[in-house]
Length: 420
Image 1: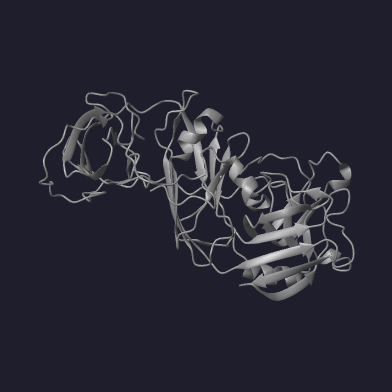
Image 2: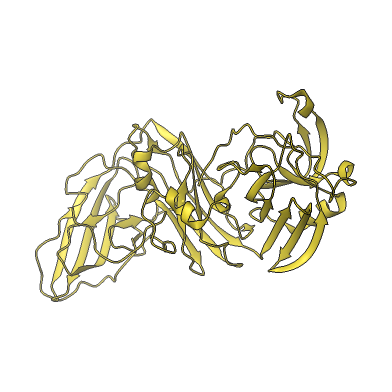
C-alpha cells in the first residue's frame, strides 16, 4: 500500500547487559525504578486539519487502512490511506462506537496518523480521511474496523525517565524490554518510540545486541534547558514471537545545567566543568590492576547518601568485604561508583587501590554529591579496561558514527528529527 507522502524523518539508538559480571566496589544490581505506564484519555481535539469540508470538486474515494470491516486489529493500529500522487491529507477523524473522537497526530513523513493513546481492546472504530489534490480535487475515505481482544502473552517494558524531573546533559532516553525484542521486530517497535526535544535537536536510537534495551541520544550532549518529551508507544504491538507490547509509557523531563567530570589515570585527578568552566580539580584513586576502573564515558545512574557495599559472594576471596559507604553515585551495573573513601586519602592522586570505583575524599565526595544529577557524565581515560557496552548507560561511549549503526531504521546524516 502507498502511504501518505511527505518528507520526514526516522529515528534511530545502545545496549544493556544488566547482569555483567564485572568487578566493582559494590555488587548491588537493582536498577532505578521505571516510570509508570500511562494511557491518556481520548479527547475531542482534532489532530490535523479543520472541521470544515473543502468545497473543491470531489475526486475518487480514498481506500483507507485498516480496511472497512477489518477485525482483530492491534490497539497500536495507525490510520493510513492509498493517496493519489500530489495529494495531501487535510483531516483525519477517528471515532469509537459511541461517537467519541480520538485525538492523534500525523507522522512528520505523512505515512500514517497515530492516535495519542492506545485504542481500546475489543472496540469498533470508524476512520475518516480527507485529502486535497494539487488540482484542487477533494478525496475522502471511510472505514470501520474492530480491535482485537486483550492478548494473554505480553512483553514487559520500562522507561528510565520520570515526569517533571531534571537530569544531566548526558541523560539518554533508555527503553527496556523483557524479554528482548527480536531483530526482525525492532524496526516496527522503533517506529513507535517517539522523542521530541525543545529546543529541537536531532537524535537516533541504538539497540543492544540482545534487544533488551534501546538508547536515544543526540550527536552531542543535550543543550542545557532542553525539554525531553518521550512516548514509548508499545501497547498492542504484535511481535513475531507471538507476544504483544504491554503498555504505553510516557514522560516529560528537563535537562539542567552542564556538569561534566573528567578523570585522567595518568594524573590521578578529576577535573570538574560547570557550564564549560573548570570549577574544581581533585585527586582520585582508581581501580588497582587486578580490578581496574573502566575507561569510557559513563553517566550517573543513581545516588545514595549512605549505602553498604557487600561483595561477600565474589568468587575471589580477596575481593570480599562489607563496607559502609557515603555519597555513592553509581556509574555501571557491574558496581563502579564515585564515592567517599577516607581510607584511601593517602593514595588519592598517587596510586590506584580501589576495586574499580573512583575514590575521592569525604569532603570532595560530599561536594560532588550535592552538585550532580542523574545523567551527568563522567569520562575516565587511561585505565587497563575499556567500558563494556551496556554496562551502565553507555550511549556516550560510542562515537556518533558507531552509535547510529545500532539503529533498526536508517538515520539521516546528523540525526533524525521527531517522527510525530
